[in-house]
Amino acid sequence: MSQNVSHVKYNLLNLPDSVIFADGNVLSFVYMADGRRVGTDRPADKDL
Image (cartoon, rainbow, N blue to C red; front, side, top):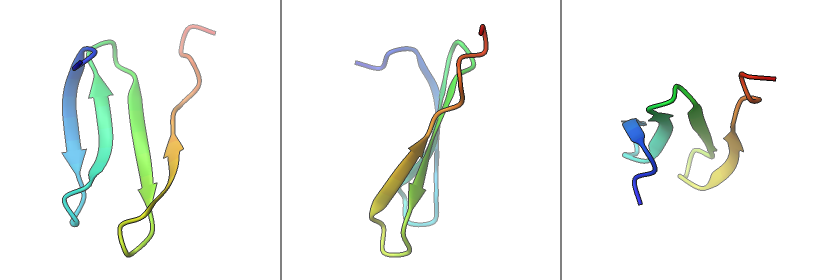
């Protein structure tokens, strides 16, 4: 289930802010002030 997760960073509301994978990919989350997730930012593939 971990899918090679290297590190998880949390924001002030204790919600995951970014997930860093062992291969260097980063998944970032965007939240409203009340904690509702409104988006996910995933950079394009580095190999392309």
